[in-house]
Amino acid sequence: MADLEADLLARIRTHGAVPRHIAIIMDGNGRWARERHMPRPFGHRSGMKTVRSVVEGCLEAGVEWLSLFAFSQENWQRPETEVSALMSLLEEFIAREADELKRQGVRVRVHGDVHRLNGPAAAAVDRIVSVTAGGTRLGLNLFISYGGRAELVRAAQLLARDVQAGRLTPDEITEDEFRARLFTADCPDPDLLIRTSGEQRLSNFLLWQVAYAELYISSVLWPDFGRPALYEAICDFQRRDRRFGRVTP
Ligand code: IPE
Ligand code: IPE
Ligand code: MG
Image 1 (cartoon, rainbow, N blue to C red):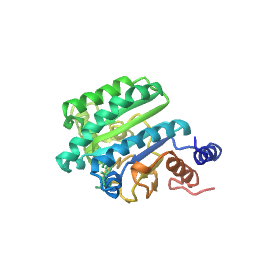
Image 2: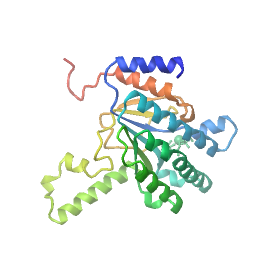
Image 3: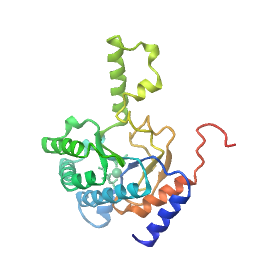
């Protein structure tokens, strides 16, 4: 491990609570490729390697949940060549990583409108979820073909069905009942939301869940966001004063 990385990790371990759940909008692959006069999929391939480093960083730092925005509902509108390159990379990532993730105790879940995935990509997704199902060290949520508004609409539909079937009355619809119908029902809300590449927007990611997340915008493009950058973000998080609307004593 490089000196900088070891120093940052030591600082994290002595500086208080580590975020239990980190969410990341992995952005900037296209610009990274363009800087190198390469086609966009070259950046996506390089970004795939960053996922491995960040998973390892979370395991080292003791983070319990990692949520990665890999492909948005809106990303279906990109050119067909880019979409198919991304689907092939997803299959390649799963073929390469599934066994190692299982060995490391990582439990993968995939959230989004996965019915839109092609046959091989959908099969790969099923495979990684079942292979890693027993993992207990880190929960890795991959958001693929995902949109935050669609997730909220889906939760509303599930509630409406329960009301229609007489399992719930309208007055019994509480925040907890709503939350229980989100993809992330079984994990805590993200404490820290990181977006790479300097963009300052949510782009329809986890609209409900990030209500009180600490935001961290990194100017680094995703393919260059390694473990040191992750540790810097965690150190920054540890300096925040989270008040949740109250006053600090
Ligand atoms: C993020 O990188 C990956 C996906 C959205 C799939 P981009 O492809 O958005 O890269 P930029 O923003 O064009 O640089
Ligand atoms: C958000 O990035 C989606 C993912 C990282 C998967 P985009 O690059 O698609 O977002 P916009 O278009 O800049 O808002
Ligand atoms: Mg982008």
